[in-house]
Length: 370
Image (tube, rainbow, N blue to C red; front, side, top):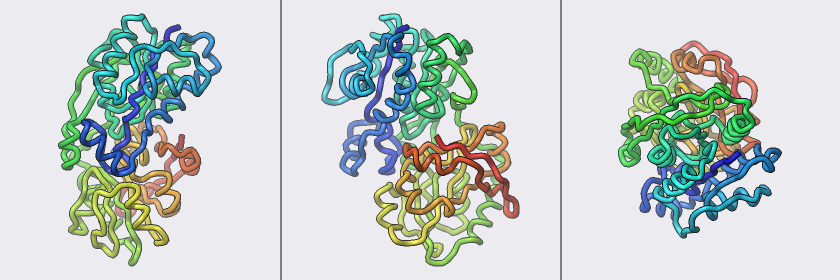
Protein backbone atom coordinates (compact mmCIF):
# COMPACT_ATOMS: atom_id res chain seq x y z
CA UNK A 1 0.00 0.00 0.00
CA UNK A 2 1.24 3.48 -0.87
CA UNK A 3 0.69 6.14 1.79
CA UNK A 4 1.38 9.80 1.06
CA UNK A 5 2.48 11.82 4.09
CA UNK A 6 2.68 15.63 3.99
CA UNK A 7 3.37 17.90 6.97
CA UNK A 8 2.86 21.65 6.89
CA UNK A 9 5.52 22.46 9.52
CA UNK A 10 4.29 26.01 10.19
CA UNK A 11 0.62 25.14 10.71
CA UNK A 12 -0.66 26.19 14.13
CA UNK A 13 2.34 28.34 15.04
CA UNK A 14 0.22 31.45 15.51
CA UNK A 15 -2.17 29.85 17.98
CA UNK A 16 -0.43 30.19 21.34
CA UNK A 17 0.74 33.72 20.55
CA UNK A 18 -2.78 34.83 19.65
CA UNK A 19 -2.36 35.36 15.91
CA UNK A 20 -5.24 33.06 14.84
CA UNK A 21 -3.22 31.44 12.07
CA UNK A 22 -0.01 31.66 10.06
CA UNK A 23 -1.20 32.55 6.56
CA UNK A 24 1.32 34.88 4.96
CA UNK A 25 5.05 35.52 5.44
CA UNK A 26 4.57 38.62 7.61
CA UNK A 27 2.30 36.82 10.09
CA UNK A 28 4.66 33.85 10.22
CA UNK A 29 7.61 36.14 10.99
CA UNK A 30 5.58 37.93 13.65
CA UNK A 31 4.69 34.58 15.22
CA UNK A 32 8.36 33.66 15.41
CA UNK A 33 9.25 37.02 16.94
CA UNK A 34 6.62 36.41 19.61
CA UNK A 35 8.27 33.11 20.48
CA UNK A 36 6.07 30.71 18.50
CA UNK A 37 7.52 27.32 17.66
CA UNK A 38 6.40 24.52 15.31
CA UNK A 39 3.52 22.41 16.62
CA UNK A 40 2.60 20.47 13.50
CA UNK A 41 5.58 18.06 13.29
CA UNK A 42 4.92 16.80 16.83
CA UNK A 43 1.25 16.17 16.03
CA UNK A 44 2.14 14.50 12.73
CA UNK A 45 4.37 12.05 14.62
CA UNK A 46 1.49 11.14 16.94
CA UNK A 47 -0.50 10.03 13.91
CA UNK A 48 2.37 8.19 12.25
CA UNK A 49 3.20 6.32 15.47
CA UNK A 50 -0.04 4.38 15.09
CA UNK A 51 1.25 2.96 11.80
CA UNK A 52 4.55 1.65 13.19
CA UNK A 53 3.32 -1.97 13.56
CA UNK A 54 2.24 -1.86 9.90
CA UNK A 55 5.33 -0.10 8.51
CA UNK A 56 6.70 -3.13 6.65
CA UNK A 57 3.50 -3.30 4.62
CA UNK A 58 3.44 0.40 3.71
CA UNK A 59 5.41 2.30 1.10
CA UNK A 60 5.59 5.69 2.79
CA UNK A 61 6.05 8.56 0.35
CA UNK A 62 6.84 11.92 1.89
CA UNK A 63 8.59 15.28 1.49
CA UNK A 64 12.04 16.51 2.56
CA UNK A 65 12.92 17.79 6.01
CA UNK A 66 10.15 18.81 8.37
CA UNK A 67 7.52 18.28 5.67
CA UNK A 68 7.52 14.60 6.59
CA UNK A 69 10.95 13.04 6.13
CA UNK A 70 12.35 13.92 9.57
CA UNK A 71 9.22 12.82 11.43
CA UNK A 72 9.12 9.50 9.56
CA UNK A 73 12.80 8.68 10.08
CA UNK A 74 12.60 9.53 13.80
CA UNK A 75 9.91 6.85 14.14
CA UNK A 76 11.92 4.22 12.28
CA UNK A 77 10.31 4.43 8.84
CA UNK A 78 12.37 4.34 5.66
CA UNK A 79 10.36 6.71 3.48
CA UNK A 80 10.64 7.49 -0.19
CA UNK A 81 11.35 11.23 -0.31
CA UNK A 82 10.19 13.34 -3.25
CA UNK A 83 11.10 16.91 -4.17
CA UNK A 84 13.87 19.15 -2.92
CA UNK A 85 14.36 20.45 0.60
CA UNK A 86 13.66 24.18 0.87
CA UNK A 87 14.61 26.79 3.44
CA UNK A 88 11.02 28.00 3.77
CA UNK A 89 7.83 26.08 3.14
CA UNK A 90 4.73 27.59 1.56
CA UNK A 91 1.40 26.58 0.00
CA UNK A 92 3.00 25.86 -3.37
CA UNK A 93 5.24 23.21 -1.80
CA UNK A 94 2.21 21.41 -0.36
CA UNK A 95 0.42 21.50 -3.71
CA UNK A 96 3.47 20.32 -5.66
CA UNK A 97 3.97 17.41 -3.27
CA UNK A 98 0.31 16.40 -3.44
CA UNK A 99 0.39 16.51 -7.25
CA UNK A 100 3.46 14.29 -7.44
CA UNK A 101 1.99 11.81 -4.97
CA UNK A 102 -1.23 11.70 -6.96
CA UNK A 103 0.75 10.86 -10.10
CA UNK A 104 2.54 8.08 -8.18
CA UNK A 105 -0.78 6.36 -7.47
CA UNK A 106 -0.88 6.59 -3.68
CA UNK A 107 -3.78 4.83 -1.96
CA UNK A 108 -4.29 7.41 0.79
CA UNK A 109 -2.94 10.86 1.62
CA UNK A 110 -2.29 11.62 5.30
CA UNK A 111 -1.52 15.30 5.88
CA UNK A 112 -0.95 17.58 8.86
CA UNK A 113 -2.08 21.19 8.93
CA UNK A 114 -5.11 23.43 9.23
CA UNK A 115 -7.83 24.71 6.94
CA UNK A 116 -5.33 26.44 4.66
CA UNK A 117 -3.45 23.18 4.21
CA UNK A 118 -6.70 21.36 3.44
CA UNK A 119 -7.42 23.94 0.75
CA UNK A 120 -3.99 23.37 -0.79
CA UNK A 121 -4.55 19.61 -0.85
CA UNK A 122 -8.04 20.07 -2.31
CA UNK A 123 -6.73 22.31 -5.10
CA UNK A 124 -4.73 19.36 -6.40
CA UNK A 125 -6.47 16.23 -5.21
CA UNK A 126 -10.16 17.13 -5.29
CA UNK A 127 -12.08 13.85 -5.13
CA UNK A 128 -9.43 11.78 -6.92
CA UNK A 129 -8.24 9.85 -3.84
CA UNK A 130 -9.05 9.40 -0.14
CA UNK A 131 -7.42 11.75 2.36
CA UNK A 132 -7.37 12.19 6.12
CA UNK A 133 -6.11 15.27 7.92
CA UNK A 134 -4.06 15.42 11.10
CA UNK A 135 -5.42 18.46 13.01
CA UNK A 136 -2.51 20.82 13.59
CA UNK A 137 -3.78 24.28 12.67
CA UNK A 138 -5.37 27.07 14.67
CA UNK A 139 -8.72 27.25 12.90
CA UNK A 140 -10.04 23.87 11.85
CA UNK A 141 -13.52 24.30 10.41
CA UNK A 142 -13.11 21.61 7.74
CA UNK A 143 -14.53 18.12 8.17
CA UNK A 144 -11.61 16.38 6.46
CA UNK A 145 -9.71 16.08 9.75
CA UNK A 146 -9.66 13.40 12.40
CA UNK A 147 -10.64 14.67 15.83
CA UNK A 148 -7.14 14.02 17.21
CA UNK A 149 -3.73 13.32 15.64
CA UNK A 150 -3.64 9.74 16.94
CA UNK A 151 -7.10 9.13 15.50
CA UNK A 152 -5.86 10.28 12.09
CA UNK A 153 -3.33 7.46 12.34
CA UNK A 154 -6.10 5.05 13.35
CA UNK A 155 -8.18 6.03 10.32
CA UNK A 156 -5.20 5.59 8.01
CA UNK A 157 -4.30 2.21 9.52
CA UNK A 158 -7.84 0.86 9.32
CA UNK A 159 -8.31 2.07 5.76
CA UNK A 160 -5.02 0.62 4.51
CA UNK A 161 -5.80 -2.71 6.18
CA UNK A 162 -9.22 -2.81 4.53
CA UNK A 163 -11.06 -2.53 7.85
CA UNK A 164 -12.67 0.83 7.06
CA UNK A 165 -14.65 0.90 3.84
CA UNK A 166 -16.99 3.85 4.40
CA UNK A 167 -15.96 6.93 2.43
CA UNK A 168 -17.63 10.27 3.16
CA UNK A 169 -17.59 13.47 1.13
CA UNK A 170 -16.26 15.96 3.66
CA UNK A 171 -16.30 19.75 3.47
CA UNK A 172 -13.17 21.83 2.90
CA UNK A 173 -13.78 25.17 4.62
CA UNK A 174 -11.54 28.14 5.25
CA UNK A 175 -11.91 31.67 6.54
CA UNK A 176 -10.29 34.99 5.76
CA UNK A 177 -7.51 35.25 8.38
CA UNK A 178 -7.18 39.02 8.03
CA UNK A 179 -10.89 39.46 8.75
CA UNK A 180 -10.63 36.79 11.47
CA UNK A 181 -8.03 38.85 13.33
CA UNK A 182 -10.47 41.78 13.25
CA UNK A 183 -13.18 39.64 14.86
CA UNK A 184 -15.09 38.88 11.65
CA UNK A 185 -15.78 35.29 10.66
CA UNK A 186 -16.10 34.89 6.90
CA UNK A 187 -16.15 31.18 6.17
CA UNK A 188 -16.32 29.77 2.66
CA UNK A 189 -16.93 26.29 1.32
CA UNK A 190 -14.24 25.42 -1.22
CA UNK A 191 -15.31 21.90 -2.07
CA UNK A 192 -15.34 18.31 -0.87
CA UNK A 193 -12.72 15.61 -0.45
CA UNK A 194 -13.21 11.90 0.12
CA UNK A 195 -12.43 10.84 3.70
CA UNK A 196 -12.45 7.31 5.19
CA UNK A 197 -15.07 7.74 7.86
CA UNK A 198 -15.68 6.41 11.34
CA UNK A 199 -17.81 8.67 13.50
CA UNK A 200 -15.77 8.36 16.68
CA UNK A 201 -12.52 9.22 14.88
CA UNK A 202 -13.39 11.96 12.37
CA UNK A 203 -14.56 15.42 13.33
CA UNK A 204 -17.71 17.14 12.10
CA UNK A 205 -18.04 20.43 10.30
CA UNK A 206 -18.08 23.32 12.77
CA UNK A 207 -21.71 24.15 13.51
CA UNK A 208 -23.19 27.62 13.17
CA UNK A 209 -25.13 29.45 15.87
CA UNK A 210 -28.95 29.37 15.79
CA UNK A 211 -30.55 32.72 16.46
CA UNK A 212 -32.64 31.27 19.34
CA UNK A 213 -29.44 30.76 21.32
CA UNK A 214 -29.10 34.47 22.03
CA UNK A 215 -31.50 34.57 24.97
CA UNK A 216 -29.87 31.48 26.49
CA UNK A 217 -26.44 33.08 26.11
CA UNK A 218 -27.72 36.20 27.88
CA UNK A 219 -28.91 34.12 30.83
CA UNK A 220 -25.58 32.30 31.06
CA UNK A 221 -23.75 35.64 30.95
CA UNK A 222 -25.89 36.99 33.82
CA UNK A 223 -24.96 33.97 35.94
CA UNK A 224 -21.22 34.22 35.21
CA UNK A 225 -21.12 37.95 35.99
CA UNK A 226 -23.03 37.39 39.25
CA UNK A 227 -20.46 34.78 40.30
CA UNK A 228 -17.37 36.90 39.67
CA UNK A 229 -15.18 37.24 42.76
CA UNK A 230 -13.02 40.19 43.76
CA UNK A 231 -9.30 40.09 43.03
CA UNK A 232 -9.59 37.04 40.77
CA UNK A 233 -8.32 37.08 37.19
CA UNK A 234 -10.93 35.79 34.75
CA UNK A 235 -9.50 34.48 31.51
CA UNK A 236 -12.32 34.90 29.02
CA UNK A 237 -12.28 32.43 26.13
CA UNK A 238 -13.16 33.09 22.52
CA UNK A 239 -16.42 32.70 20.60
CA UNK A 240 -19.88 34.17 20.23
CA UNK A 241 -21.19 32.20 23.22
CA UNK A 242 -18.70 34.03 25.45
CA UNK A 243 -19.22 37.53 24.02
CA UNK A 244 -22.40 38.28 26.07
CA UNK A 245 -20.32 38.03 29.26
CA UNK A 246 -18.11 40.90 28.12
CA UNK A 247 -21.19 42.80 26.93
CA UNK A 248 -22.73 42.51 30.41
CA UNK A 249 -19.52 43.92 31.86
CA UNK A 250 -19.60 46.70 29.25
CA UNK A 251 -16.07 45.79 28.22
CA UNK A 252 -14.58 45.48 24.73
CA UNK A 253 -14.36 41.87 23.61
CA UNK A 254 -11.84 40.13 21.38
CA UNK A 255 -14.35 37.79 19.77
CA UNK A 256 -11.77 35.36 18.44
CA UNK A 257 -9.06 35.93 21.03
CA UNK A 258 -8.55 35.72 24.79
CA UNK A 259 -9.20 38.59 27.21
CA UNK A 260 -8.42 38.91 30.93
CA UNK A 261 -10.72 40.62 33.43
CA UNK A 262 -10.22 41.43 37.12
CA UNK A 263 -12.71 43.19 39.39
CA UNK A 264 -14.94 43.53 36.30
CA UNK A 265 -12.34 45.66 34.55
CA UNK A 266 -10.35 44.75 31.46
CA UNK A 267 -6.75 43.89 32.36
CA UNK A 268 -5.53 42.76 28.94
CA UNK A 269 -7.07 41.94 25.57
CA UNK A 270 -6.21 39.49 22.81
CA UNK A 271 -3.42 37.90 24.84
CA UNK A 272 -1.12 35.03 23.98
CA UNK A 273 0.06 32.18 26.17
CA UNK A 274 3.12 34.03 27.53
CA UNK A 275 1.10 37.13 28.48
CA UNK A 276 -1.47 35.03 30.29
CA UNK A 277 1.19 33.22 32.29
CA UNK A 278 2.97 36.48 33.17
CA UNK A 279 -0.27 38.12 34.36
CA UNK A 280 -1.68 35.28 36.48
CA UNK A 281 1.53 33.84 37.92
CA UNK A 282 1.09 33.56 41.69
CA UNK A 283 -2.48 34.89 41.51
CA UNK A 284 -5.89 33.25 41.66
CA UNK A 285 -7.38 32.84 38.21
CA UNK A 286 -10.31 31.17 36.48
CA UNK A 287 -10.95 30.24 32.85
CA UNK A 288 -14.33 30.55 31.13
CA UNK A 289 -14.70 28.54 27.93
CA UNK A 290 -17.46 27.27 25.68
CA UNK A 291 -17.93 24.26 23.45
CA UNK A 292 -17.36 24.44 19.70
CA UNK A 293 -20.76 23.52 18.28
CA UNK A 294 -20.83 20.30 16.30
CA UNK A 295 -17.22 19.41 17.17
CA UNK A 296 -17.20 19.48 20.94
CA UNK A 297 -13.82 20.99 21.75
CA UNK A 298 -13.30 23.26 24.75
CA UNK A 299 -9.49 23.41 24.39
CA UNK A 300 -7.28 22.95 21.35
CA UNK A 301 -9.31 24.52 18.55
CA UNK A 302 -8.99 28.26 18.03
CA UNK A 303 -7.86 28.90 21.63
CA UNK A 304 -4.35 27.43 21.76
CA UNK A 305 -3.39 30.40 23.95
CA UNK A 306 -5.09 28.43 26.72
CA UNK A 307 -2.28 25.92 26.65
CA UNK A 308 -1.43 23.05 28.94
CA UNK A 309 0.86 25.39 30.87
CA UNK A 310 -1.95 27.91 31.41
CA UNK A 311 -4.43 25.22 32.47
CA UNK A 312 -1.88 23.69 34.84
CA UNK A 313 -1.33 27.09 36.49
CA UNK A 314 -5.06 27.87 36.78
CA UNK A 315 -6.11 24.39 37.91
CA UNK A 316 -8.90 22.19 36.57
CA UNK A 317 -11.28 23.18 39.38
CA UNK A 318 -11.10 26.81 38.25
CA UNK A 319 -12.37 26.14 34.73
CA UNK A 320 -15.98 27.06 33.98
CA UNK A 321 -17.61 25.53 30.90
CA UNK A 322 -20.66 27.29 29.46
CA UNK A 323 -22.87 26.23 26.57
CA UNK A 324 -26.51 26.49 25.55
CA UNK A 325 -28.71 23.40 25.41
CA UNK A 326 -28.72 23.61 21.60
CA UNK A 327 -24.95 23.48 21.51
CA UNK A 328 -24.87 20.46 23.81
CA UNK A 329 -27.54 18.73 21.73
CA UNK A 330 -25.47 19.36 18.58
CA UNK A 331 -22.85 16.97 19.98
CA UNK A 332 -25.34 14.10 19.49
CA UNK A 333 -24.08 12.30 22.56
CA UNK A 334 -20.41 12.60 21.68
CA UNK A 335 -18.18 13.76 24.58
CA UNK A 336 -16.71 17.21 25.08
CA UNK A 337 -13.13 17.09 23.79
CA UNK A 338 -9.77 18.40 25.03
CA UNK A 339 -6.67 18.43 22.82
CA UNK A 340 -4.08 20.85 24.21
CA UNK A 341 -1.06 18.96 22.87
CA UNK A 342 -0.12 18.16 26.47
CA UNK A 343 -1.05 14.52 27.14
CA UNK A 344 -0.92 14.91 30.92
CA UNK A 345 -3.34 17.84 30.87
CA UNK A 346 -5.63 16.16 28.34
CA UNK A 347 -6.00 13.02 30.47
CA UNK A 348 -6.72 15.15 33.54
CA UNK A 349 -10.08 16.02 32.00
CA UNK A 350 -11.24 12.44 31.42
CA UNK A 351 -14.53 11.83 33.18
CA UNK A 352 -17.38 14.29 33.67
CA UNK A 353 -17.58 18.07 34.03
CA UNK A 354 -20.27 20.58 34.94
CA UNK A 355 -21.63 22.64 32.06
CA UNK A 356 -23.66 25.78 32.75
CA UNK A 357 -26.54 25.76 30.24
CA UNK A 358 -28.80 28.51 31.66
CA UNK A 359 -28.94 30.86 34.64
CA UNK A 360 -30.07 28.20 37.13
CA UNK A 361 -29.28 24.98 35.31
CA UNK A 362 -26.16 22.88 35.05
CA UNK A 363 -25.61 19.40 33.65
CA UNK A 364 -22.89 16.82 34.07
CA UNK A 365 -21.41 15.89 30.71
CA UNK A 366 -18.76 13.42 29.65
CA UNK A 367 -15.33 14.84 28.75
CA UNK A 368 -12.61 13.06 26.80
CA UNK A 369 -9.01 14.23 26.83
CA UNK A 370 -6.82 12.82 24.08
